[in-house]
Length: 115
Length: 114
View 1: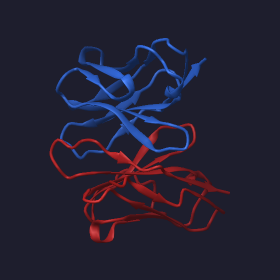
View 2: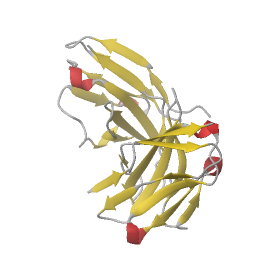
View 3: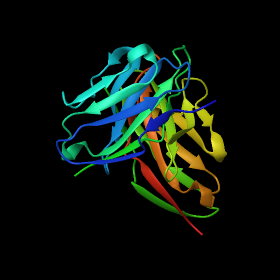
View 4: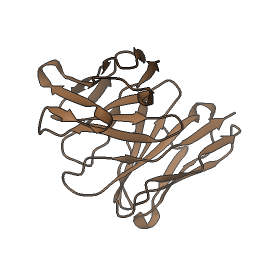
């Protein structure tokens, strides 16, 4: 079974540019989460999809961040325009929508550097 | 509201020695607790989890953790460190309704001394 995949693995952009991160969850997982780790700090929750609906977006830092999950499969996270403080590692995780399935399976992350 | 405190951002132990990584949590609801590990250039991998069953939880690679409600702790241990245990370890908490977001600690980088 394929795990959670994320693309790209690394991205270096200049301040003011746009970047789109993609996450492909494990097949059949209706829950999809985005997290971010800024250097030296804790991994922080950004948002949670259940299928194509945003269940919780309380962690989104501001309106420069737009997440979508059309069709309830893969998800994209767009940052527009990017700022220096957006640098960090962006993780995606997925889990089944079943009682007792608490484990979130993480992807390898996308390392974003904004210059 | 939930939070996690991991004491010690860096821990070094000798190969064969006991590994002890500390995690204390705060939660307004009964928690689920997790330990994840991140090896260099890899994603997060679940080591073990506590979901209100047995308080002593055994995970992969010989790790275990004990949930102590009175101490609000979930420390991770391994009797004998191996070189391959060198990695960063994250403690996380969520509520117990399932499908909830994780709140992480700042991580502990474990170094194994040969």
